[in-house]
Length: 201
View 1 (cartoon, rainbow, N blue to C red):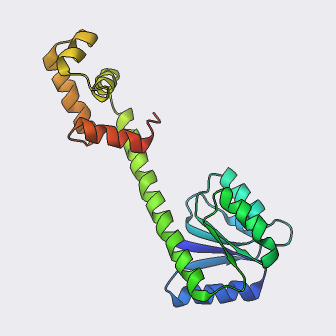
View 2: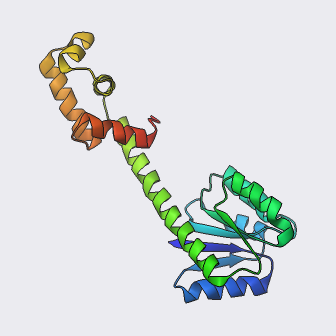
View 3: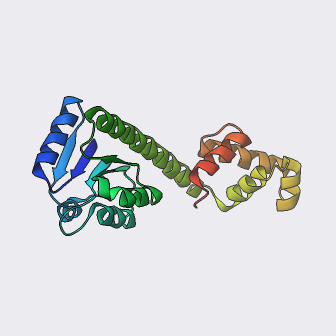
């Protein structure tokens, strides 16, 4: 489920943000510290993170870095005081989604949270598509991969047949199987699917 994960050591702020998000119909969970969130973190979590920059012990940016090292790619917004802006800008350069100064305007925060949730949904969809393409590539036989690579190089069937020392009819059969297994109807669609997957085989 797509959820806003709030991490702030100020209980009043956690309660206010939870209420704001609830009023917008947005699901949220909150934690009183970075350490508490890390203890509960699961790679299957979906949604976005709202982190306070300054917290006791581990700071928001430190938590962000730890999560990135764990492979977490949820869009992250930082809540900052005026003196924290340089840190927030540095976090943006490291891939954070945005930062919002406290006290923040309710509508701006809620709008940015919804945009972050939409981004996470899109990123999850793309990742699922990438995994599907990679699984399909792994289902190809060695010969089918050779034919696929030749197709992607723009070679005609008769050229592929000559290079692989097989009959042109055999190339046609392999070509049809490659398209069927990859779920595409043309060489262009095949190239687009592999580009999406990054050809990580």
